[in-house]
Image (cartoon, rainbow, N blue to C red; front, side, top):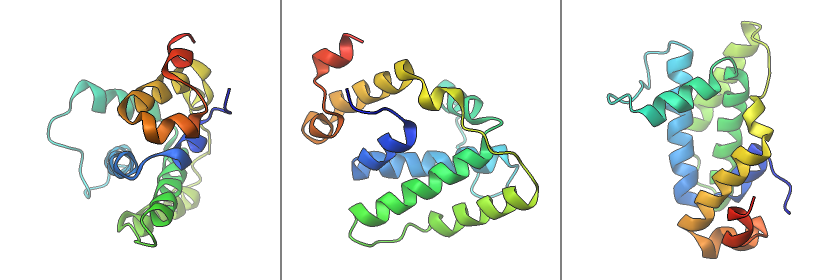
Length: 143
Protein backbone atom coordinates (compact mmCIF):
# COMPACT_ATOMS: atom_id res chain seq x y z
CA UNK A 1 0.00 0.00 0.00
CA UNK A 2 1.07 3.57 -0.61
CA UNK A 3 2.76 5.45 2.22
CA UNK A 4 0.11 7.31 4.18
CA UNK A 5 0.39 10.74 5.72
CA UNK A 6 -1.62 13.94 5.72
CA UNK A 7 1.17 15.93 4.07
CA UNK A 8 1.62 13.18 1.46
CA UNK A 9 -2.09 13.22 0.68
CA UNK A 10 -1.96 17.01 0.24
CA UNK A 11 0.52 16.56 -2.60
CA UNK A 12 -1.93 14.23 -4.37
CA UNK A 13 -5.03 16.44 -4.10
CA UNK A 14 -6.95 17.52 -7.17
CA UNK A 15 -7.08 21.31 -7.64
CA UNK A 16 -10.72 21.56 -6.50
CA UNK A 17 -10.14 19.65 -3.27
CA UNK A 18 -6.93 21.58 -2.78
CA UNK A 19 -8.84 24.88 -2.96
CA UNK A 20 -11.36 23.59 -0.42
CA UNK A 21 -8.59 22.47 1.95
CA UNK A 22 -6.86 25.85 1.68
CA UNK A 23 -10.09 27.70 2.46
CA UNK A 24 -10.85 25.42 5.40
CA UNK A 25 -7.31 25.75 6.75
CA UNK A 26 -7.49 29.55 6.61
CA UNK A 27 -10.81 29.70 8.44
CA UNK A 28 -9.87 27.17 11.10
CA UNK A 29 -6.42 28.64 11.78
CA UNK A 30 -7.76 32.20 11.95
CA UNK A 31 -10.43 31.08 14.40
CA UNK A 32 -7.95 29.13 16.54
CA UNK A 33 -5.59 32.11 16.69
CA UNK A 34 -8.38 34.57 17.50
CA UNK A 35 -7.89 36.55 14.29
CA UNK A 36 -10.56 38.92 13.03
CA UNK A 37 -9.93 38.08 9.39
CA UNK A 38 -10.74 35.87 7.67
CA UNK A 39 -13.48 34.76 10.02
CA UNK A 40 -15.02 31.41 10.66
CA UNK A 41 -18.01 30.65 8.42
CA UNK A 42 -21.33 31.83 9.86
CA UNK A 43 -22.80 28.32 10.08
CA UNK A 44 -20.74 26.42 12.60
CA UNK A 45 -21.70 23.00 11.30
CA UNK A 46 -20.61 19.80 13.04
CA UNK A 47 -17.99 19.13 10.36
CA UNK A 48 -16.44 22.59 10.88
CA UNK A 49 -16.42 22.06 14.61
CA UNK A 50 -14.85 18.61 14.17
CA UNK A 51 -12.10 20.06 11.99
CA UNK A 52 -11.46 22.85 14.48
CA UNK A 53 -11.31 20.41 17.38
CA UNK A 54 -8.95 18.15 15.44
CA UNK A 55 -6.47 21.02 14.88
CA UNK A 56 -6.74 22.59 18.36
CA UNK A 57 -3.28 22.62 19.94
CA UNK A 58 -1.65 22.03 16.57
CA UNK A 59 -1.83 25.54 15.12
CA UNK A 60 1.81 25.49 14.03
CA UNK A 61 1.26 22.24 12.12
CA UNK A 62 -1.88 23.70 10.51
CA UNK A 63 0.02 26.81 9.40
CA UNK A 64 2.67 24.57 7.85
CA UNK A 65 0.02 22.37 6.23
CA UNK A 66 -1.64 25.48 4.74
CA UNK A 67 1.70 26.57 3.30
CA UNK A 68 2.19 23.10 1.79
CA UNK A 69 -1.30 23.30 0.25
CA UNK A 70 -0.58 26.76 -1.23
CA UNK A 71 2.72 25.55 -2.70
CA UNK A 72 0.98 22.56 -4.27
CA UNK A 73 -1.70 24.85 -5.70
CA UNK A 74 1.06 26.93 -7.29
CA UNK A 75 2.40 23.81 -9.04
CA UNK A 76 -0.99 22.43 -10.18
CA UNK A 77 -2.33 25.75 -11.41
CA UNK A 78 0.71 26.57 -13.51
CA UNK A 79 2.16 29.20 -11.22
CA UNK A 80 -0.90 31.02 -9.90
CA UNK A 81 -0.13 32.20 -6.39
CA UNK A 82 -2.93 31.80 -3.88
CA UNK A 83 -3.58 35.03 -1.96
CA UNK A 84 -3.53 32.96 1.23
CA UNK A 85 0.16 32.00 0.78
CA UNK A 86 1.56 35.18 2.41
CA UNK A 87 -1.10 34.90 5.14
CA UNK A 88 0.10 31.39 6.07
CA UNK A 89 3.71 32.62 6.09
CA UNK A 90 2.69 35.44 8.48
CA UNK A 91 0.90 32.98 10.74
CA UNK A 92 3.96 30.73 10.81
CA UNK A 93 6.11 33.72 11.83
CA UNK A 94 3.65 34.82 14.54
CA UNK A 95 3.47 31.30 15.94
CA UNK A 96 7.27 31.01 16.04
CA UNK A 97 7.64 34.45 17.65
CA UNK A 98 5.09 33.54 20.33
CA UNK A 99 6.97 30.34 21.06
CA UNK A 100 4.10 27.97 20.32
CA UNK A 101 5.28 24.40 20.20
CA UNK A 102 5.11 22.33 17.05
CA UNK A 103 3.26 19.05 17.14
CA UNK A 104 1.43 17.22 14.44
CA UNK A 105 -1.93 15.85 15.46
CA UNK A 106 -1.89 12.11 16.13
CA UNK A 107 -4.62 11.55 13.53
CA UNK A 108 -2.31 12.99 10.83
CA UNK A 109 -0.47 9.65 10.79
CA UNK A 110 -3.34 7.37 11.86
CA UNK A 111 -3.71 4.71 9.15
CA UNK A 112 -7.47 4.31 9.70
CA UNK A 113 -8.18 8.04 9.48
CA UNK A 114 -5.98 8.53 6.43
CA UNK A 115 -7.28 5.44 4.63
CA UNK A 116 -10.84 6.64 5.24
CA UNK A 117 -9.94 10.07 3.90
CA UNK A 118 -8.34 8.57 0.81
CA UNK A 119 -11.35 6.30 0.34
CA UNK A 120 -13.65 9.34 0.19
CA UNK A 121 -11.33 11.07 -2.28
CA UNK A 122 -11.11 7.91 -4.39
CA UNK A 123 -14.91 7.70 -4.57
CA UNK A 124 -15.05 11.38 -5.57
CA UNK A 125 -12.51 11.16 -8.43
CA UNK A 126 -11.39 7.59 -9.12
CA UNK A 127 -9.63 8.59 -12.34
CA UNK A 128 -7.48 11.16 -10.48
CA UNK A 129 -6.87 9.47 -7.14
CA UNK A 130 -6.73 5.80 -8.21
CA UNK A 131 -3.26 5.96 -9.77
CA UNK A 132 -1.94 8.36 -7.10
CA UNK A 133 -3.06 6.24 -4.17
CA UNK A 134 -2.12 2.94 -5.82
CA UNK A 135 -5.26 1.30 -4.48
CA UNK A 136 -8.71 0.35 -5.67
CA UNK A 137 -12.00 1.12 -3.89
CA UNK A 138 -12.18 -2.57 -2.90
CA UNK A 139 -8.77 -2.37 -1.20
CA UNK A 140 -9.80 0.76 0.65
CA UNK A 141 -13.12 -0.70 1.83
CA UNK A 142 -11.34 -3.81 3.08
CA UNK A 143 -9.10 -1.89 5.49
